[in-house]
Length: 483
Image (cartoon, rainbow, N blue to C red):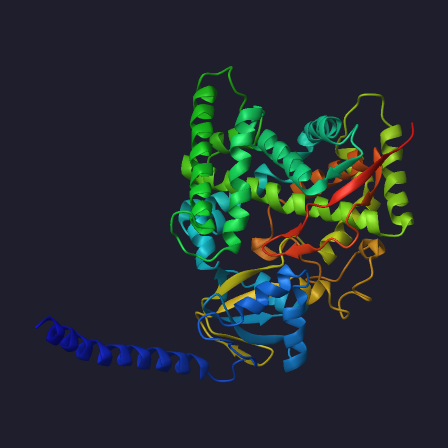
């Protein structure tokens, strides 16, 4: 009887499965038969070209995936399939211009499912009204006028960091030390957190997040993906505790100043309707700022150390002379200020050239909300779009001899619009751009005025997914300047 039942169920399921397959194939064919789609292929079923996309990034050449296809199809726009979704890649300055100027008209931010599960939606994009308000309010907290008062604090933290972890050492591993430094700065400026124990508790989960983004999206106990979800939740819970305590301290009068850090300013600021930002959205936004500082800025600083060790000595020497002139112009013990940062023009040109060659983030995703045409090809509504820094940063049409390290590219008016995009562009441009600039320059100042250095592993690989990072942490030998 049981066998008969199983056979009956099987006969019922087979037609249903066949019908489902038919619907999927029909849907696939329907979407793929849209008029004049960009050239390209969809790769393997389900995974598409994801493995090749990730592999080229992990090997340190993320641009290979893009330029191989630009050459193959003789087109700056092509279709592919990544992370289970139909994808169009728009390349070049014209592609960047279209995407950056079409926010909420043609495209909206989008992230792969595993990223959305690790981070709450409001951390990555603004989908509700309050989050949109916060997005518009955020620049006032981290613009130049607000941040310049924090430069002496950044410098003080940097001096203590180098004294504790770099000086009196003949060899250090750069990446973990830089992450420690950038995280200390972020926690101090964003939340006035300096307690070593709390800093340690907050820092650990951020390393788990990066490995989780790389992992398969299998949410089972013990998997990297599951650990990343838990780490993200833990961070927000700890931030909520800090926020609630800060509200009490602000209400108490003398325990906290309304202007002491970005958290206090967020708590006392209201929108045009007189409404305060919710604690949850503040926690989400602070988490985003911490991620940017812990991962992206530390990636840039580490890449700068790498290039200054490899490049002809005149580039290091020019940075050194600029920074030592600033140091000698100041009375003993005086910390860096905004005027000093403004004098670091050559150093910033060097940092920009590093950002061109190895931007910490390789690109970003969008989702089309309307059909549109680009370069004569139809981009259907609902498809995903990817823009890549490599499509302009490594493009000889945008930068002559793109593989050559040349800080002079950023003199005068600098690169053409929409070609240099390490911080994105348009409404989605990274709001922390000025914060990153200040922190990077303070780091460079404190590094080069103390040391020259050389790489311990000359051919160390730099991984490029999800962020640029040295495979072995970039160990270097330090050579202190003789005073």
